[in-house]
Image 1 (tube, helix red, strand yellow):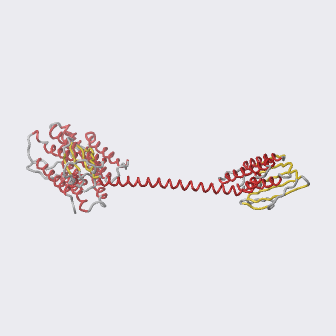
Image 2 (image 1 turned 90 degrees about the vertical axis):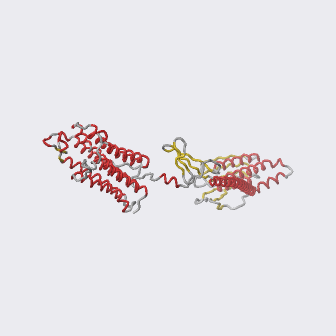
Length: 537
């Protein structure tokens, strides 16, 4: 069993104060000093209440503890009124006597609420059912206060109210005392139950001791066996027994840690290694920690932090040298990271530009490869002596090179549509008319195809057009774009063109076929392209 120095000191102080109260009541005083015992108890109670205000950290428990102190002060005030201030006024004395039971019930119910609030989270309020004992206790108090009307709590000889000192107890008193005893007992056992996991068996006995002493003395008071000193009245009256018992129980709960409180914080502060001082309202040092070797001064490596507290402030010195070094390291690392990021960003830009350039060059090389026959043909015709005779053919070839290059660029971005094919064919046919060939273009439908199919269609149509330039008199081109196939039909009037290459084939995601129908100087060449899965036959 281990008790802290503070707990032992508190136990001895309570025991000494309780015995000193009995000593005060054992002496005869002059008339104006007969209430000295009550004044003494009230002074101790006020000191305890102020300590509770400073020590207890839980706001709800602090309010309930101060409520218990207020009830005990009311008890002492009623005693002073009955025995000193209103001596000789029978009616007032009787009602002061009835009033004793108000603080007795109040302290019992408050102890029950304190037991419920121990180890209860601050953000979890008490259930409404927990207030039912308060309502029942209020009804029993009302039963006591209205005893003159019904006599259920106390009865007097010959029903003479002026002889209330010679009273006997009734059912109302039995109910009242039973309820108070039940509330106090329930609070006591609930507190012990909550302390089983936090306290040892010896520590749990400390709150039990004041309750057991109070129960024994109250039982002796009821039985009339309470000791007397020097032929005076009882050594303690009921208010002092009840008050010291309840306050002793609550203080024991504080000392063993059931009620959270700042205990021995002065000693803790003095032994603390952190340099700090507590100053009063005038700025004078009241307490200093073990880490304070001289006056607290602020420097580059030492920062002073101040926080107001009740009655003054606390000032502490915080060593920030390590923090300053860490900040410097972080700043240097940040600069390095920033420089590294800038280098990586520049490197990524260079790589991106190089990749774009390589992609662009590869694309241009591909375009040159695709249009190389036309480019070579243009170069040959430009080298001829009579260029004017070949201007129309050169225009047709240039139109194809331009439009085929555009289609390749658009196909690289997956943005090639049927409209682009029709525009390319119209432009090519427009330049064909410069060669003395009558042309016409008709388009219908709106199918959707892969870019490779559309570029293949333009290439095949261009091949037919180029082979027809020498002997064609008129060319009419019909484009029909349907979902199942894309069909280009060229109606040619003139000599039959020579068409090298396969009559059918398979491309990337499509198939194609070419058919020729010719009769004399009239003929039709049909180019049919079907998406993958369809038939170009």
